[in-house]
Image (cartoon, rainbow, N blue to C red; front, side, top):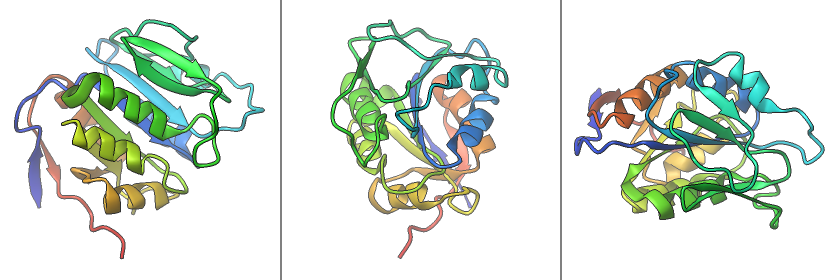
Length: 209
């Protein structure tokens, strides 16, 4: 059954995405649906080892039209750019800039999803779309709730599609998720939401018992 999201037709031009296990493929598929000139900026957190030296922006950038970077602390947020959190740093959005810090791990990981989502909700309110993709654990559940409480929209990857469904399932159970979609559907929906269009989507999958 179809439902409509963003009936208020608010331009949702701040996108935050979180993932964990098998997440880089899911993130790549979402970003591959986005045009190079998307009038939004995007923050991505994928759980990774503190010892990881791989620049994931290179991996993602080869398969997407939109520009992908690993930011430095204090970089300005610019439309048409995807910022992916470096290893061993929490990444947040503050005063139209990127903030990186080595604060305590959350959910046993750094970077964690919740700090990014919370900061975006505080700074940009209803302009935010929060997206949780495949992953283990419940990082992102509180962050999505922060997005929803600030007037933003919360989306998740369909648990039935996710290689590791626990992060989307926890989000559905506790975060007032508006829709659970395939990664292709998420990418297509984001293009409309950024431009302030009401988007027709399938109703959310049932929360786990």
